[in-house]
Length: 357
Image 1 (spheres, rainbow, N blue to C red):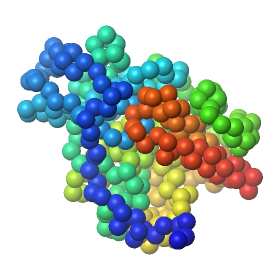
Image 2: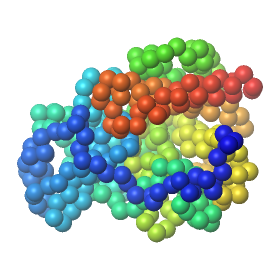
Image 3: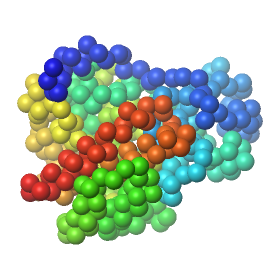
Image 4: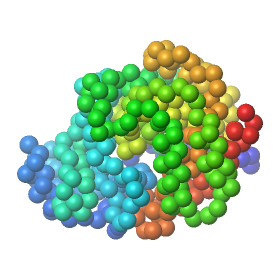
């Protein structure tokens, strides 16, 4: 069989778009009675008892469903064990979603945040659960061709609206991020984290860590950036092709919007060619980018080589961290080893882009 899987094959092997929930897995168990007591004392209208289960998926911060007789909530916490510096910033997730509550960027309602590690062992926050679909496959196999196009246009419009938010006006200026030099700081950060979590030598990563800092574009625009903007990190409305809430803001900061825009285009660089994506109802890259620039009010970008190479390099570094946490026994999901080939594959794609420029 060809390495390029048809969309028809993907549909036949894909289950419904429902979040997978398990019992709380061993490494992530915590004192549920202590959490219940904390919520009782800090969350107005809270009615114990609670039932706690864990969401499958998500490779960074463990995520839990908290249910009472009349309410469904979601808790995000840091994982256990020794963590890489500047990783797993649940406080950052809480801060940015709370700040965006009054904007036109859809986010869940924030309920409570706790930085006291003595309560359940790590920092955590709790938010209202947004009903809808969790779609892990960015090709949207369970949607009609018409809905695929509509959802992706809405998805990129939400990103454009995020990049138009006045970050100082919503309280995300001081202490949230530093304006300017975004790519230089990000390349330095992910290079350090990659080296700290290395499990094998990958020459392309070494080459990229030399090339990227020397080829950063002059444009130094600053906006709020999500840092991990993907359909997988959104709640899709239960019946309509639109984004009901954007999740997973751990990597958000002040930075250059082209980082987000390059990341959300990764599906165009997968096994399926753009022609097959378009036949399935997904917009062309040109049309998707056109909608983004129309809504954002920014001028189009002519050369994407740096931005896409940076994106694949960064993804390789992130996956390396996932694998290392799994090998150390504190991954948020049991699927970590399945991601290991992606490290070398993403590094090779990035370096090939640089060499063919």
